[in-house]
Amino acid sequence: MRNVLVNNEGLYAGQSLVVEQYTFIMQDDCNLVLYEYSTPIWASNTGVTGKNGCRAVMQVDGNFVVYDVKGRAVWASNSRRGNGNYILVLQEDRNVVIYGSDIWSTGTYRK
Image (cartoon, rainbow, N blue to C red; front, side, top):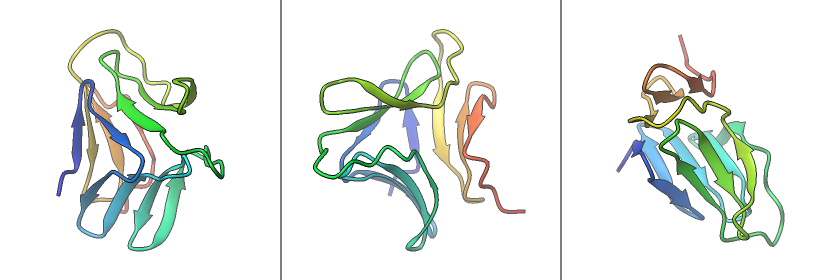
């Protein structure tokens, strides 16, 4: 199982990153959700019934963006820092972090 996205990689509906008991999934309803087992602990709140074909992309500018089926941005991490090498990681501490420098996270790490 993968737990990393690099520049220009993404998650399409039904695809996920997994590490231990944590799953970061682009759901079929266009909602990006972080689960611990089957309990949601973070969501982009972009879910819309009947909206499939969404994708979440780790962009080369450091921004992680959810696009709807028409290619419109419906959520973003707002972590844009200019073109560079960025990596989004679902960590074992249940946090999702974008590295180049720590520029965005879900804030869900467990101490």
